[in-house]
Amino acid sequence: MSMGSICLTILRPGLCAGLLAASGGFCGLRAEVPLVQATVFKRDILPVLEQACIGCHGPRKARGGLRLDSREAAMAGGDSGSQAISVNRPEASEVLRRIKLPRDHDDAMPPQNKPGLAPGEIAAMQVWIAAGAPWR
Ligand code: HEC
Image 1 (cartoon, rainbow, N blue to C red):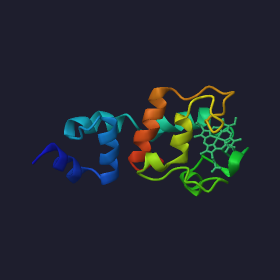
Image 2 (cartoon, rainbow, N blue to C red):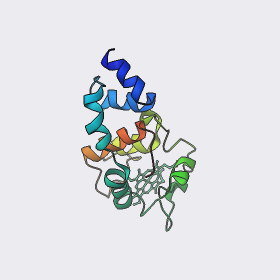
Image 3 (cartoon, rainbow, N blue to C red):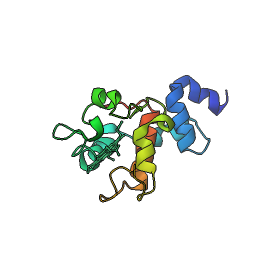
């Protein structure tokens, strides 16, 4: 059995795709453990959302009609109608597109006057969405 088939057997396809992207093409048992551990929602994702997003996309303000303080709200998206988080598909997720934009771009999130996310935070967000965006 090749590493590829082991990967497909033990992981859901979306998670495997995320692992493949994040590991530069290698997706096997050895890659699985650190990458999955690298995106524990409460440790790596929630603090970033709370610090950088929820002040404008939460219970107090819902800029752009978007809230990011619950999975349901995040899935419902905002005014643009584009999918904020497309489960298992970081490339189709508006949240990821915007956090990856150059800081001087009009659509960049957080907006230009705020600090952008660190590369590691962006990478964690990408793997987390690829893994199905679990909210726990
Ligand atoms: C200082 C306030 C502020 C912060 C912080 C902020 N945003 Fe925004 N966000 C806005 C505003 C204002 C809009 C609406 C204008 C626009 O679409 O650019 C918006 C729109 C969006 C949209 C598009 C919603 C839609 O469908 O129309 C997404 C996705 C988004 N933000 C994601 C994020 C993410 C992810 C973070 C954290 C990394 C974040 N934002 C942090 C103010 C903020």
